[in-house]
Length: 151
Ligand code: ADP
Image 1 (cartoon, rainbow, N blue to C red):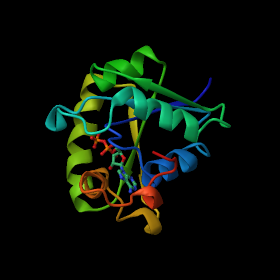
Image 2 (spheres, rainbow, N blue to C red):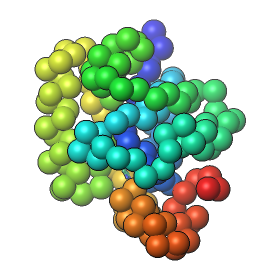
Image 3 (spheres, helix red, strand yellow):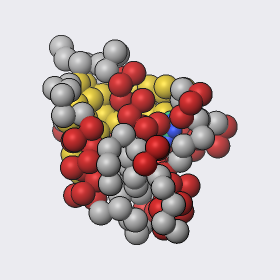
Image 4 (tube, helix red, strand yellow):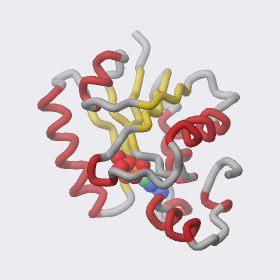
């Protein structure tokens, strides 16, 4: 049976930190579905969602194990529909841990088959966050070093 993992996130924008999680995840899973979702706590996106999907597709163009989708439903339900038994997430610090811990508990409650798998960030990407990139970009700063594609 194929090991399919769902990597859900806002990806606003998708960063080199996210890319690193996917590349490392590919050593564990046969297929990774990168699913761009709407985080209700971050309701208004900065980067257009269809455009972000294209950038991510471009990033993994040579990688048949990666698929990019947009979704707007419960993550646990979306995973079930797509045959994904693993939820891939990244951890940078204790703040991430607190947040990830609670959503993993809820996702497990909603879908018993779903196992969350966490990869600790690689040190060179630990400081990269989508929110900081948005701030720098908003004031016309150069963010190209943090992104695996050209805006
Ligand atoms: P969400 O809005 O669902 O938190 P994000 O796009 O912010 O989505 O992040 C998706 C996942 O990637 C989360 O698990 C987050 O902790 C992780 N992540 C974000 N940045 C990094 C990074 N630099 N290194 C490792 N993991 C990261």
